[in-house]
Image 1 (cartoon, rainbow, N blue to C red):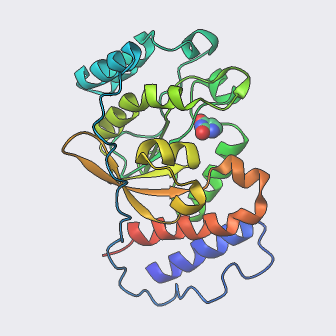
Image 2 (image 1 turned 90 degrees about the horizontal axis):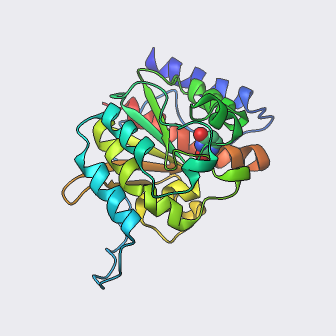
Length: 257
Ligand code: URA
């Protein structure tokens, strides 16, 4: 029964993505469910050398505020109150999350766009619609199964690409967000999210389709899968083939055992 569900999920994804040819060179063998091995986790990048690099006051403040909050409502308020970034002044609404905290899967994107800024919810525009279709294809939906947030809670003006400094400034908040939402694993959507949370130098082409570990604090790490950003898939349909493999990896992981 489960095998049949997996086959149907695969088929639905291919149809939804407009596939008109085989997506993999070799059969994926979904019909016979072989035991899924424990994910092979890519080694964490070496810790940055302990050279005393001055931490800007705003980053210190973000880290202190994030560490102090006991729960998600307090985290949301802390982000709302944090005055260390001018993004707050130009954005319309704080974009905190969608879905249920405590869901086994947490998706982490980059930054809200115009639609998200208007509605105060992550991934509600065109890339969000593709994301929902991809999730549905493997039997998932935002809600009890999937919780979603972004590294940046504010839309960068004019949808410009966030700077590295902005991503690093908000890193303590998203780390704490993951800790408090307590998923089983996180899916990092796109290169900016993956590089920021993994502290990696590699681009998404190298990071995607592999299991990693995201460091949440000095003692805690969480399993993470990196994949291509839906906005990139909208611009580059040929890359959907790679994304399909990534989502299948997630599907297999969630259905193992
Ligand atoms: N892109 C993102 O990374 N996040 C959103 O919420 C919307 C688009």
